[in-house]
Amino acid sequence: MRDERRGAERIPAEKPRDTGGEGFDEARFFLRCGIGKPHVAAAARAARANATSIEKELMARGLIEPRLYYRWLAGELGLPHVDRIDPDEVVRLPMMDALLRRDGPLRLSRPDGQVTVIVPEARTLDQQKAQLSARPGLRSSLAVASPSAIREAVWQAGAGDRVRRATFELDQDPRGTSARRVMTAAQGFALALMLCFALTGVLLWPFMAFTMLHVVLTLFFSGGILLRLAALVTSVPVPARARPPDRPDTTPLPVYTVLIALRHEAAMAPALVSRIAALDWPKSLLDVKYICETDDAATISALLAQNLGPECEIVRTPSFGPRTKPKALQYALQGARGSLVAVYDAEDKPAPGQLLEAWAAFRRGDPRLGCLQAPLAIANFRANWLSGLFALEYSGLFRILIPFLARTGMPIPLGGTSNHFKRSALEQVGGWDPHNVTEDADLGMRLHAQGYRTGTLRCATIETAPVARTVWVRQRTRWLKGWAQTWLVAMRRPLRTLLALGPAGFLVFQLMIAGMLVSALAHPLMFVFIGLTLAWLASGSAPAAPASQNVLMWIDLANITCSYLTFIAMGWRGFTRHERTRLNKRWLFLTPAYWLLMSFSGWRALRQLATDTHLWEKTPHHPDS
Image 1 (cartoon, rainbow, N blue to C red):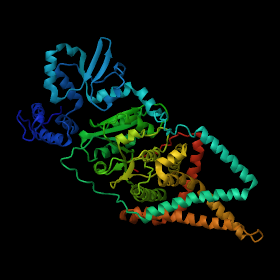
Image 2: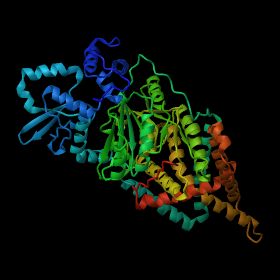
Image 3: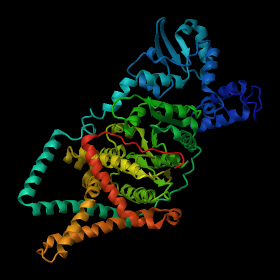
Image 4: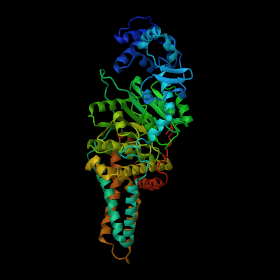
């Protein structure tokens, strides 16, 4: 235990006024240990409010060093203390992973016999002393370790089985919702058949074939615009900063798990740990998991250098299967101790009150509310035109479109960060798909298909946008490839998807997922068609263009114009006054270039879908961006 002489007097063993009942003996115990009365009294109040113990609250406040404390408890009980548990000694029982969510006991197999490692508590120390005095023979088969030492050994001992389960469990689900396979045999046959018909149509009736294809693409494009116009007309802008609800003093909070998947993020570690520590939630009820690849020594070392509190642990994901963010999240989910789960990224700066707002929303919501999406705001929107238009896009998506879909009960393709889940809902739908590179959109659809509703929050998370064109293209390629994966998985059984999502939800799914990809791919083709039609009309020697071509050309012009205007209007509507006044307005004229970059990424995603389906092109982050 840490010395309390700085700012806290040593108090003799006496009854603190703010403790009572079971907490009286525990409080007196820590007073005898030399911890100052103000600290013990504050910990006792927090223990009553959080339904924990004084011991846990003192640890959460950094007033007890766990490693030294459990060594001292071992001495009090006359038992050996284990600082680090050899994972090869762990007895692998079927329910061993339960120890990732609760504190011991853990059984070890040693040459001289089995040993049970326990985690003693101050509240039961006298009882345990009495039991050991009555049965001294137990001492040879018992040892003491800290909860973190036990969890670390369990993570290592079961890593192989756990990572295989995380990687393939969804693929083995009879519902067939994994993107491990690009497409099924039936889908491959249907695609081949469609290509044959299309090729035959192009060869025999080229004009009719191209016209039909043009009409289909136009319907997707127009449908997406109409959906966004509906969101814009009915919008109620979500402020980038909102005050969270006050916590009722009489309502205990649940344990909240925060998952953060990291890869090559050593430079971000100090800022990230500081931002997570600023979350307004009792440390004794936080379960923060920094998830790293086992071979990412730089990031792990950077995290260890931050002197993480007892609420934090570093989860090392074995190098097996696809190296994707959803695989890391799915692996760590098996050790999540909270009934609520939040997901953040390395560069995120969540509003401190975001967890409180999510908890309050879950309490108010009905049992079908399984997920909440917080809005994302871009901090570096003044860096260049790319980050400025990225901020405009995020504003329209997270402050206008997603709230509209939530209000109307439609399926929502989640953002990749600042998602808050009921863990029970997350586990029921199978968690994240390790093989889907846009795991957020896929998970949002599966939640809706299985009867869960997604809501939105007001407290925002601040992010940074890519400022380099190559980085932006790689990120957008990954998103579009993941949306293609999501669409292919859902359309393995179209009728089942229709019944699960409902007619309106199925239509929104087609417009949001397939429509986004089709719009990106078709965008430059529309310019080509408009140019060829205008050239045809300008040519005096050529015969008059068919009326249908003229109509389609004008529809294309209207679609392109409306898509740009809707994009700008949605983003502008969602912007705060600060963002509106500081954004360089001239960048709005570069919206066509932004969309053409999106199209380039779409065609790149299509090629990658066929050649390197599960490649995760990581977006690099910088602490000063």
